Amino acid sequence: MASQELISKLENTIENIADFPIPGIQFKDISPIFLDPQLYEEVIEDLVAFSKGKIDAVCGIESRGYLFGIAIAVALQVPFILIRKKGKLPPPLVSEKYDLEYGSAEIETRKGQIKKGQRILIHDDLLATGGTTEAAAKLVKKQGAKVVQFSFLIGLKDLKGEERLKRFNAEIYHTLEY
Image (cartoon, rainbow, N blue to C red; front, side, top):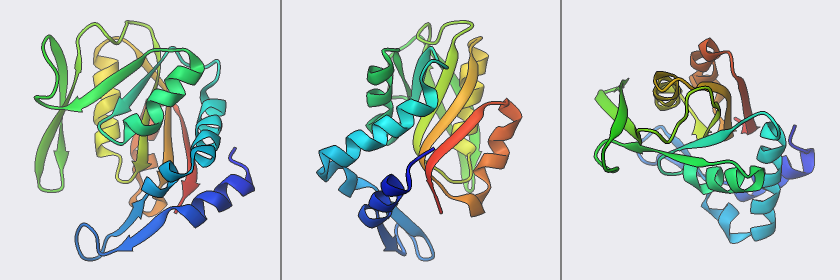
């Protein structure tokens, strides 16, 4: 869906940082996008076009999912719901535990913010292995809503996160794929 022009601009803007945060990782630094308000707006327009008329709310995953997710929700005039790491929101809460490579983690949202029957877009900046995004989808489902879309600025195809999300029968979109 993204134009070749937008893809080229992003590829020339996003910085690849070798061996960060650990050796062997190629970190995709998206922060230079925020130095160019016009480029940021183009990214939002691209992500909004994917979801227009298809969702009732956006759930953004802490913390980088908020960078674009809030703007998507505002442009679509739908609610934005925070999905946060355990212990960051006041009760009442709904939570979902998930496994990491070394240990486990838990995410939460405030009870009552996701409404039964809502069509939900889950947004994050990057799709890697899909573990956190899968947990977010389970959190949405647990509250009686349906994840109908996932969107990301970047998808890392070699890490197979998209395969993990297919079980939710939702559309999956990323502006860039590496």
